[in-house]
Length: 226
Ligand SMILES: Cc1ncc(C[n+]2csc(CCOP(=O)(O)OP(=O)(O)O)c2C)c(N)n1
Ligand SMILES: [Mg+2]
Image 1: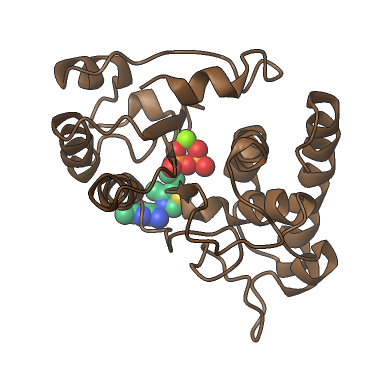
Image 2: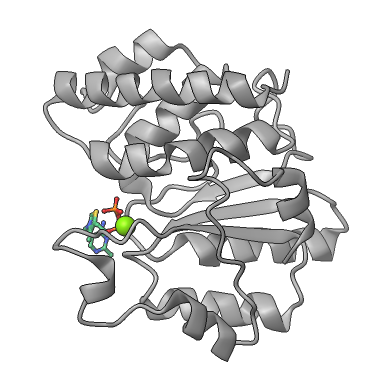
């Protein structure tokens, strides 16, 4: 059952609490990036064609989170949308014997790709989108990645492949929160200019405050754009 806008806002509040709780109990983890990306996670998991009751359906949309250190955010969004129990998550996060490892791990319902090593998620998503073209499946692929990983060459290679293969079944969202591990993302020694690097590859980036500004643009519309 898809959530309404007001329900998503309330879930965002609950998830922020979950993120604080699980990183406090574990005494480790990345609460900042998780809180930054949580609205994006809730929005995309909610709109994507994935059934929490049947999360491995071959026809499901694929959601690849590339900045896997935001696992508290990814896990709490999935838990609050019904993929698994939130108390198991809060108690188990980063504990031995739990499936909820510090970086998101494939095999957990809703998690498509094991990431945490920044810069790899777009390549995985491009592969999935290309596979769908080849097999004739019509699932959609969403890749969500961060600004800190954006200067990586692997992302540029994946972006150019997506353009070359005309992957109109792929949507990419970047959490441009202007922060990375050692300071401002824009001050990073490999200067990030998301707009320019995309333009150079022939991709017109839609800079929008959609997610951060209370989900003001319908995500269905976003899904239709490339
Ligand atoms: C390849 C690689 N290098 C370094 C790291 C260590 N690392 C973990 S989180 C992080 C911050 C990166 O910034 P960003 O991805 O924008 O995340 P945010 O701080 O916004 O959550 C880094 C560098 C990593 N996970 N992978
Ligand atoms: Mg960042």
